[in-house]
Each structure stands twice: as C-alpha cells, then as structure tokens.
Length: 199
Image (cartoon, rainbow, N blue to C red; front, side):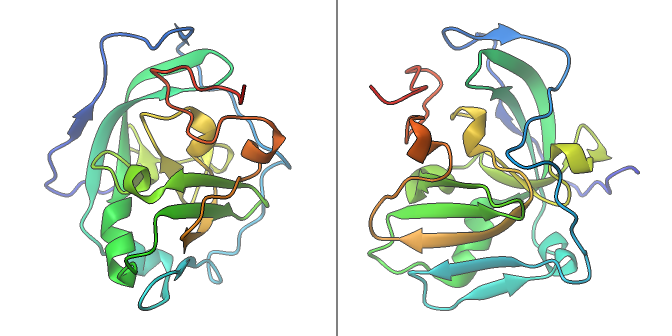
C-alpha cells in the first residue's frame, strides 16, 4: 500500500562512503529476538514518559497527524552489512519528544518495543535531525517483518539502535543498557568509530 506523501523535503543523510568493516547489499535481512509480535492496532499506543513534564500517549492516527519527514539514509548492521540510500518516512523523534517537554535532567533514553526488545541512546543522539520514527520505506508502508507499525531509524548508529515495533520511549537521567547492550554490544554504536562491542 503506498504511503501518502506530504510536501516534505528529504533530509539527506546518505553517505557515498561505507563505514569501516561494512559491505553494501541489496537485500534486507530480517532479524528479531523473539519473532514478529502480533499487534492489535486498536490498542496500539506510543508512550513518552519518564523525566518529562507530561506523559504523552499517541494513537497511530495521532502520530500520523504530526509533521511528516522523509529521511534519505544508510542502514548499517553491526554484523557487517549495509543498505545504502533508503527513504524512510515518518515523524522526526525530536517532534514527538518535544510534546512531552523533557525535564532538564533528562540526558538519556530507553526505547521499548512490543517484542520485549529495548535499546538505549543519549537523548542528544535520539533527537538528532536525521532520527525518525518510521512507518514507511521507499514509498511503501513497512512490512511487519521490518517493524510495522513503527520502527526507529538512527542512521549514524549500528542498526541494533534502530528498534522495530516501538511502543515507548523513557527519558532518564542516567544511562542504562538495553537488550543487546547488556549482552556486550557497545552502548554508543557509532558506525564510523566501529563501536560494535564493548572492549
């Protein structure tokens, strides 16, 4: 089903150079920790909570009424493969976070997902200009395998930060590890610094 296009200029975050240790591929491998969750869209909510002035819960329709963005970005898996130049359509994370009015002490975030997955990010990284909560890719709605109804895309970090089936974002004063970070993966995951696993 085609994604409705709004008059939006793509944010350009596509590099002509691969990060070290990466190989470009045409396919899009499917990875998850527990299979594809069954999500009832009548009950679906995105919750922004924690160190905020007001907890926000958005339905899917409410989320799609926010200003839309298209981000042209590469996608880098920690296992060494990369997809180059995909168009991700959704809403910038900074737009959603702003609705909750983060408190000054909020420096980090934990992203939660419907399959039990989680990943942590610095709040500055999560609200960067190219970070999007996406429901579409290359003019089509995401498939369930790739994160429908909503996945996070963090182009400058390895893809375990680009969580699928997002259900909530908690703002925190202290950093704490998510699912893969607590199993030895790097907490920052910068693709250009090859921050794959903790030393």
